[in-house]
Length: 189
Image (cartoon, rainbow, N blue to C red; front, side, top):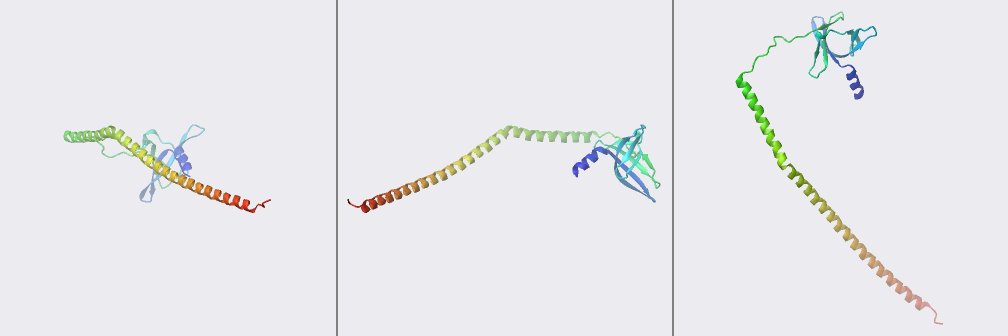
């Protein structure tokens, strides 16, 4: 399902904002669209949710979003007529920043750079020692584990050899008893 949605979003890569007139109110809706070139050379915009094609507007009605995608605004009248609109921000102006404010921001940035530079230097200085300590601790742990296992294995081997020796003694005793019984049971002629 997600793969289908991803393919759909790649195909329909234009963001469309619709301002629909509903009585006295205007409702804002969102849609996605894609450019469609017809055989006769005309270009239209196919809308996904609205399931219709509208003429592709001129470049002055197209703007780029913060994600780098094209976006177009349309006004939809009560009769269903799609008209591209250009939205402008009111009274946008650039004012210079005061020197004190600019100095404050630049010193803040410099302080942050110094702080993170010190942290980076600390890791460069002690990082190898920390890594070496972790490796040594791992080796000690493995050595203890292997030694413990070897002690258990040797104890089991000693117990097994003692059991085998006892079994051999019992077998020889029984063999001697059998030979004595055979000797006693043989006729004397």
